[in-house]
Structure formats: C-alpha cells, structure tokens
Image 1 (tube, rainbow, N blue to C red):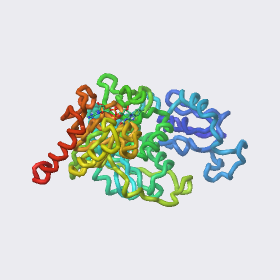
Image 2: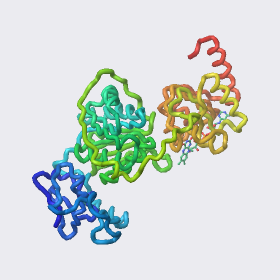
Image 3: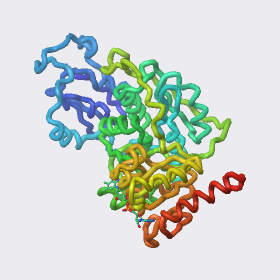
Image 4: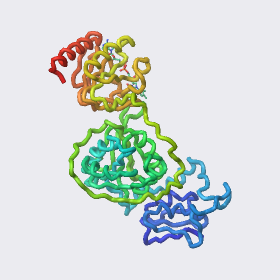
Length: 438
Ligand SMILES: Cc1cc2nc3c(=O)[nH]c(=O)nc-3n(C[C@H](O)[C@H](O)[C@H](O)COP(=O)(O)OP(=O)(O)OC[C@H]3O[C@@H](n4cnc5c(N)ncnc54)[C@H](O)[C@@H]3O)c2cc1C
C-alpha cells in the first residue's frame, strides 16, 4: 500500500517531497507522485500537505499511533537519514522551494519576535525596511506572530506598518523552542508562499531561521547590513560583510523561495509608529501537540541585570588602540561620565585587555546605533565601521588625517587624543553645568 494522492487538490508546493524520509515522492508536472516501491506509509507527507491532498490508505496506522519499531527494522518510522551531504545532493534537485510555474511566492514577511511579554525592537525596524521592499515589489507587507497570548501585539504590528498579520497562538509556543516555532513558521510559508521573509539576527533568529531555510531547502543570508530590490530581476539584494569583512558582498537567491535574510538589531532605522492603523489578521493552528515536542523548558534563568547592552545606549564613548595604554582609559571614562555615556571599543581594545568583549562594537561584536558615537583613537577598519556607521552623529578623534574613520564621521578632530579628550571633557562639563549643551 502507498500513500494516496488527490492530484486535483495537489498545489505542487513540494512540501511532501522534502518531508518524505524515504524519498518516495517527487513532483511531476507540478503534481506530487509516489514511487510505490519506496513508499513506507510513514504518514509524514500527509501531515505537512497544506492542501489535504494526501491520505493514508485505510488500515494504515498513523505514525503517532504506531508501536515503536526496532531501529533498523523495516517498520521503523522516520529511519535515520542517509549521510547529510549525500542526502542533500539527492534532494536538492527536487526542492520544495524551487520557483515553479504556478507558484505564488508573493509578499514580504517579517517574523515578529515575541518572548515573555516583550517584542524584540528589531522586529519593528524590519517592518520599516520590509515596507520599502514591498513598495519596490508592489506587494503586501505582513508580520508573522508566533507565540502564546500574542493578541496585544497585533495592533503594534499594524502601528509599525504591517498590512496583514499571520498569527499562530498556542500554549505550546509559550516559551521559545526551535522545533515547534520552526514548524509553525514553515507551515505558514508552505501555505502562503511569501517571496521574502526577514527576521532579526537575535539569539532566536540565529537559531530558528537556519532551521526554516533548511526545511524549505532555500538560501539564507545572515547579518545583512543593506537590503534592496534589483530593479530588473526583482530579486532581493542581500548585502553583508564577507571574507573577514574585507568586502561587502551582495548575495542573491535566484531559484529558491522564499528569499531569507536576518538583520542585526539597530542596523535598520526604527519606522514611525502610527497609532490606530489596522489590517487583516489571519489565524492558523499549530499542528503540534506538547507531547510531540522533544525539548522541555525546565527552568528559565534571567540574564544578569548588570549586563552591558551597548545596542540600547544613546551615547557611546568608544576607544581604540590609539589610546596607547590601559591607564589612558581614565581619559575616556571621564568623558563618558561627563556625558552619561557608556564605554565601548574596538576589537583591538578588547584584545589589549582594556575593555571586556561585551563592549566590542563591530562585525564580531555588537551593532550599535546611538544618538552620539565618539570614536577615540580608532582607525575605522571595515569590521568596526559595519557595527557603528549608522549612528546618528559620529565624532572621531585621531592624529592621522587619513584615518578611514573620518569618512563616516560627522565631525572629525585631527589631533593627539591626550590633548583633545581632556579638553572636550572640560568643555562638556562646563556647558552641562550651565545647562547649555544637551
Ligand atoms: C574577521 C574579523 C572580524 C573583526 N571584527 C572586529 C569587530 O567586531 N570590531 C572591531 O573593532 N574590529 C574587528 N576586527 C579588527 C579590525 O580589522 C581592526 O584590526 C580593529 O578594528 C582596529 O582597532 P583600532 O582601530 O583600535 O586599532 P588601529 O587600527 O591600530 O587604530 C588605531 C588608531 O589610533 C590612531 N592613534 C594612534 N595614536 C593616537 C593618538 N595619540 N591620538 C589620536 N589618535 C591616535 C591611529 O592613527 C590609528 O588610526 C576584525 C577583524 C577580522 C579579521
């Protein structure tokens, strides 16, 4: 017996092809077909079909009801997949996400990260960026909201620009876990076929997006710093540092869908919040019960309240190797104190042991977007610039007039930091005391 396919219902999305653990399914002329010699009636294809086009023959036990089979036996459900590389090479040819005639693949989606009552602000930043992409493509901008008790977030999503919000609200999704979250988003993608999907390069985004991209057999560009639409091909232009940050590479995902990118917090500007804006809400069910989830949350331990959150600071005083020695940190600290600023720095300063790694700005540190960034003795290597060049105002102090930092600075002071910084601190203190500067 093999799985039954209702070809009139099949939408040719290929979800079953990717899901089948024994590679018994294929797409022929946009319709799923089964190889009876290979089919083991595992039922995994039935579960993922968004069009209910597949069913198991009568009398076949569903996977969840089947008695546990001996590993390696003929009846084993979801037997171990073959060697990963070999497997990928085989399945790649018949990937679900390939752009086939008749596919929809339209719209820009942003996954709104919601956890323990809080939305990661990068989600709103990406709605702002997503709107520009959607305008260039002439399509809709939608938010994807996965979690539990998420209702109050929906008006916020509209306020930040979403025209539609896809919601999966289920107690199983109360605390983030890779498995149910990735299943939920992947199910939505298979059903509604967005052309582009974005998420913040946060701990959650970095964890779940690669899983979703793998399930969809599509590409993912992580940590993009610029996104755009190619006017001719209408493809997503995904720009990010490459080769150790020495070049900015623009990456295309030409033949697979959706096109997927993550973007770090604070890289894109926060869009204006428009109270009262509304849109369409689409509710979907989570197809997973708690018993199906292999990971359990045993305890939730909150991070140290004293942790440094550079990406939230409004003023940063940032130090580089030009400082010369640890004792000169006092110059920067005094300036930071006068301004109520947070100390940050380059990788050089971290490696010299002058600041801790959680204060490092740049490609392998934090991306920041403060109102004011004061760079002291920093050359302006590309790996540093990608983490701070979108700051509102940049003041750079360097004794080399050719230092690359001056190319991104709004105000450049060419001089010895040992003289410039104390003079600046004294002036700020004087003016702030008299309430002149703010
Ligand atoms: C894969 C990779 C990832 C990286 N990730 C990061 C990252 O995340 N963040 C990061 O910062 N770097 C990163 N780097 C390192 C980066 O390439 C640079 O080496 C680093 O940013 C340089 O730090 P700096 O500006 O402190 O030092 P330098 O490049 O040595 O610059 C010191 C500057 O101080 C000036 N100076 C010296 N004396 C004085 C003085 N008395 N008064 C005024 N100015 C003075 C000099 O003219 C010079 O411009 C990465 C590198 C690689 C390969």
